Image (tube, rainbow, N blue to C red):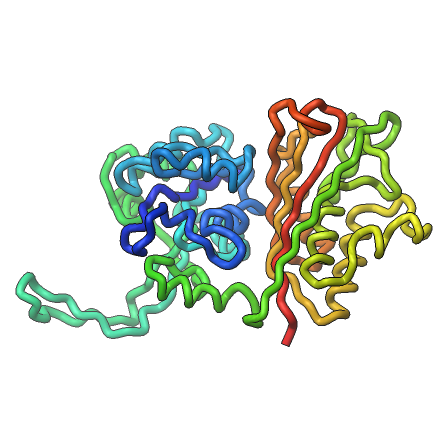
Length: 374
């Protein structure tokens, strides 16, 4: 099992913002939403540390399947608080900064692969390209380190669960968790990082990070919604996977509300009609079609029109089924149907209100960020 801790309890003081940095908008989403999205396809459990008073606001953004806890006075304090909530079944723990919102899922995967190959601590880093000087308290240079041995360290950083517990048992503060492992005398491996995993600290950093959201500066967004009533005797297909022992839903196709909402979001973003006009009852060939089939067809249509997917996010709304245990599997299915696109999957309920709250049906709302291919 893989757990992930996302440190998001920092203020926006250095950024000059009146809200916590994790709630700053980057493109069509906040930094914390970007960070959760990149980790959600890797981690079985996600814990976010929030500034006091902002727990509910962050929960609304990331969904009920992500555990949000109140952070501490320092980054190390926050990680220790979250570490206490990590499942005892966890074998590896990723520690990530919400400020490095655009670190890719691929980078997290490479960190985990290095851990599985035997390392106990793995961190990404980039070569130091600038000359670095060590100065004294009066501002005079005392030495010039050899920059060939220096690395600019990033997150997510990965650790075996037991080693990270040992490292934080010291209750020492550090700017990153790897330093605590180093203090134990254990080896920390550095793998190649990525430029897009930059730390967003200032407005200039935010402007730079926008360059990594796609290959074109012309972005469009769309929102899609779908809902279906439960119908006994039908299989339940949701988010591209089969849910045994669950009642299915009525519908022209398989009724996969998550897939359908994503299709509509992509059609809205590209102005190519909607689910009904492309795959509705007037198209008998799509009767009973799977959600993944419709996603693949949608991808083909928007690709032909010259668009590429930057990101898709979908939130399932309903009392059942419980998404958390199969989140990684569902994300993989949706992403595969969309040609490997980055996908985030969240879930929530409506506190007993309406179609979904009364247990009569299930719904989903999706957003899509696309760009024109050059």
